[in-house]
Image (tube, rainbow, N blue to C red):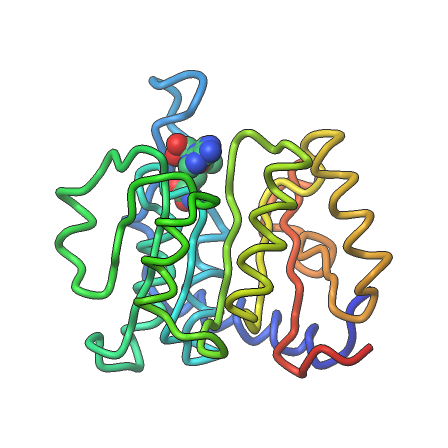
Length: 217
Ligand SMILES: C[S@@+](CC[C@H](N)C(=O)[O-])C[C@H]1O[C@@H](n2cnc3c(N)ncnc32)[C@H](O)[C@@H]1O
């Protein structure tokens, strides 16, 4: 699955990510066990490296939680950019860490359901179509209809160059979505943990859809 150019981008992002210090970015608290501390995650380095490698300016994240991935993307974007050009829109039904996220000019937290038309219109007023570099979908519901609806809606409206979906192996629903995606987009769909095993435990999985070379098959 995937292709050589995508593999090259992933390797480059991984090595750039190692040079960007994200060690202060910790995940948490855990959704189910609030006292459990997951600490820094390898994929935060990758996200910073990827944002930096593609010189990303515009990112949409579905599922903010405490904004760990948000901050990882921000770090990679602002490293080689004027931060006033960077917009990271992050959506959650509850914004739990506004004090911290408010310190970043480029981070725009939005409270609401990502499928709510008002939320979508607001994002469309912030980010124009054709300009979205990364769409990151990270939702704990991991429900087939919900995740696929978010993917379909944001994919159609914003045509992101890269789509990242977390936990593609975690539930039967996400496995089925990923299986459908791989069948439809075999050249674009990549299981990142197969290329870089340290990025994410194989039982969780992290999917990348690389449309940076266009949408042709
Ligand atoms: C796994 S967490 C996101 C983790 C985050 N990306 C990070 O790096 O720390 C999933 C988030 O999705 C949010 N969420 C779940 N269902 C939602 C819905 N229907 N609408 C909006 N947000 C939702 C939850 O509130 C939770 O904060």
